[in-house]
Length: 440
Image 1 (cartoon, rainbow, N blue to C red):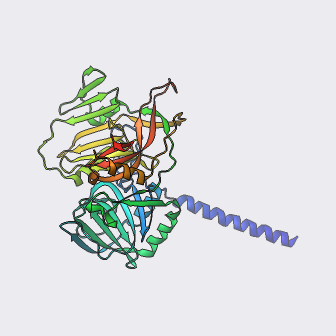
Image 2: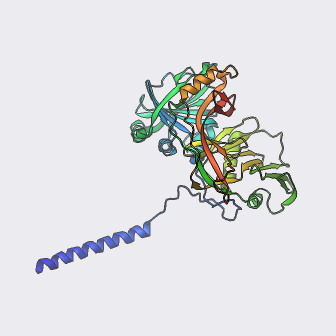
Image 3: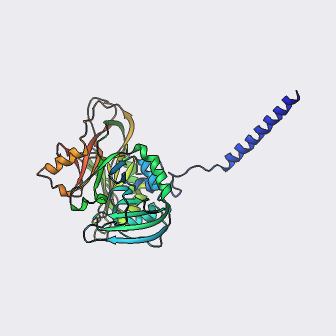
């Protein structure tokens, strides 16, 4: 009997301790706010839920490759890529070297084992190192790069290289990131890596560090169909034109609106919105770094990233910044630019803003089956053998989705959008769809 009372007392004491501990956890709990920006203004007009996108989820690589001698494996999985880029965040930079060459820059100290992070287009280094990675540096070197190499074999601290798009410059950073920590994270992503191959298209891509890396075989990808949600033109006009909107005309399914400084047009058939700010100086000096920063903030403030979007294309001459829709880790393309958000930032405000007016809703079954995609080697051979194509102008290759607006009997009550897997080729600076050995 006495033992039973002792056991009851012990149990009661343990329960009291648990209660005290749980009370402490409740009072000291801090929610995870990684995906929310504290500077979001809830009074600002918006076209969707006021959830802000972190900059490193919009300006990020679209594939990762691990190269160890002749063994080449990679992935386009965003979660795995984020695990790797997170290792670079907020590190100290102990030494900076600028490498250059009149032809193709060489990385003499690079080991035979390194990780490649590929971007779909060039990114200003000072903006990326400072605002995205948050590296601690006294000054930020300026080149436009489209590839990062991380070498963890040469030293106990990782060496990071940023390679320029023209292959003639590189930034070499000696960081405080410990090589074994980076390698450990790399091992965790290894299960998702698949065989990749390097493709040579011209003299600049003969080196292993400059080859075009793509998966050897395309995945068994499906056709996806979604009920489409439509962005309210009225809400978008509130964001772009403000309170003084004047409806001007409607002709052939194209409606136009304007205020004192700009004009917008809505194509109801193509489901696109285009805006031009007539007060901005067209002869201004373009700064693509500021253009990316300001356009990202502008779109984020009105919840404009309505699906997954990533920085995909920049034009140094015009200042145009293109954010492309992604689906299942692959870029989405559409001939009418329905899958992109194009922005040109002016001196103090947005100068041009073009986007599609539909977003993905609920997934629905698709009756259409995807054609089996050819291997990367089959695509390479077909393009190199095509007399109408200058293969030296191929600068990138990727699997993506072709977005279309099917109009059939599947659902007469709801509009749908369809995503069909295709190979896409960056040819002479422009992404084109690969079809039957040619480009369209």
